[in-house]
Length: 310
Image (cartoon, rainbow, N blue to C red; front, top):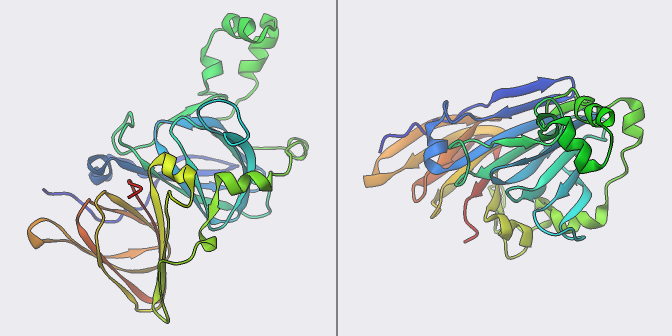
């Protein structure tokens, strides 16, 4: 088994005045496809808006910086638990089941940065998240004929043409001041159902001057159980090391802060990775491979998922 496990930076997928969406392309990292995982990163500027969309993967979003509003509708019937407009902030984990419709709006005064990590078992493209837009230049509505749109929404043909053609953006747009004033404040009550802050969970392990490991499990957060993913955050102090560990499923790891060294041992006790890692890189630990993380002098913070709730 020869896999390139070296950590990778993402490539730009799309960039507008509203922000940037990056992704880790399977073509650049074969292990993503083999491990059936995927990842992306959103940087959304103030008054930036992500058009309504859904994806072919179940994933989790982890807020690295800032705060924003998220309109989320889960698959299934329309109930209070299945839909809402919520606010998320730094440290929040937001599970997003496959097929959920969401849109994102930065109502703050600084950039929002969110890392998305996904179980790509059923993805159309191995190792990548495929998005389906509802509106805009690549949206569903634009592709249907105006006649069908007119019949569906019981409007005339001229209104139908305006409806499908008025939105010129692709994925990321920046709202005008007038448009921004129409966006309501997020519902904080729904946030408790659809999101969970990592800092609200007790660390599984905490060592003075060493660091801490915190895992959010599906048993304490039902929506996470639904997407079939566990989320962990490892924080190591200066020059601290986490002992060797392994998972029964593939693990996706993102360096949120700092730098350090990672070693991975695979089949037949072979050292398959021994390298430096730094902020913004992502790497994959195949199932049952053992991994050690050691921090540099500045320390390191690592966010990861395992594609299993066990």
